[in-house]
Length: 220
Ligand code: SF4
Image (cartoon, rainbow, N blue to C red; front, side, top):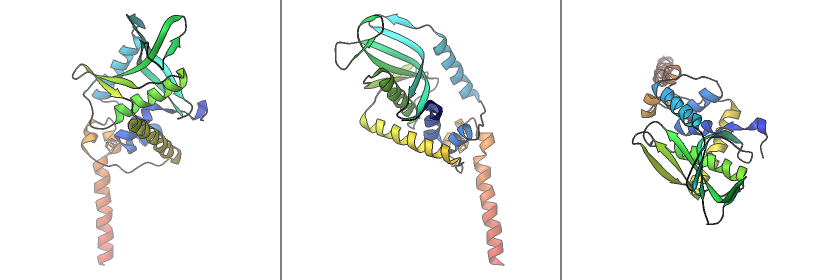
C-alpha cells in the first residue's frame, strides 16, 4: 500500500504509454507546453467537470469525482462516473438513495480513438480506484470521442488490468529513477505538444555527428 504522499497522477500512465520520454519530461523535469490539441482537450474537460451532477431515470451522473488507489499508488479525477441501477450482483448502495447500483466510468476525449492503449489504461486506472474506494466491481466503462461523437465501450478485462498494473509499476520505476529516456521519433511526435522542447530529430543528428567524429578519430 502507498501513502497519500506517494501517489502518482493517472495522467502519468497515459503519458508513459504515449511516450516514455514525454512522461519523464512532464513528471520529472516539470516541462509543459500547450498546443491546439491539449488546449482543446483541457477546455473539454473543464466543460464536462463544470456541468451539474444529474439523475436520468435509472442513471445517476457524478462529474469530476476525485479518485485514488492506495494499492496501485494512483490519484486523479474522473470526468464522469455513472451509477446504473441494477438488480444484478455484485452491486453497491449509495448514501441516501434507495436501490443497488453499479459504477460505470466515462472519460471524454476531444479527438478520435488512438492507435495506442493510453485511453484504455486511463479508464482501467480509474476503475481500480473506483473499485478500491467503493468496494465495488467494475466490468466495463466507456470513452466518449468527439470525432465521431460516440462512446466506445471498453470491457475492463483481465489482460487490460494486467497491462495497467504493469504500466503503473514501470511508470513509477521511471519517475523514481529520475531518468530521461532518449527520444524515439515517430508519427506520434506530430501530435506532441513538447515537440519543440524535446527536439526528437535534433537528438538523432547530434548522435550522428558524434558517431561521425568518433569514426574520424578511429580512422586516424
Ligand atoms: S516529441 Fe516525440 S519523442 Fe519527444 S516527447 Fe514528444 S512524442 Fe516523445
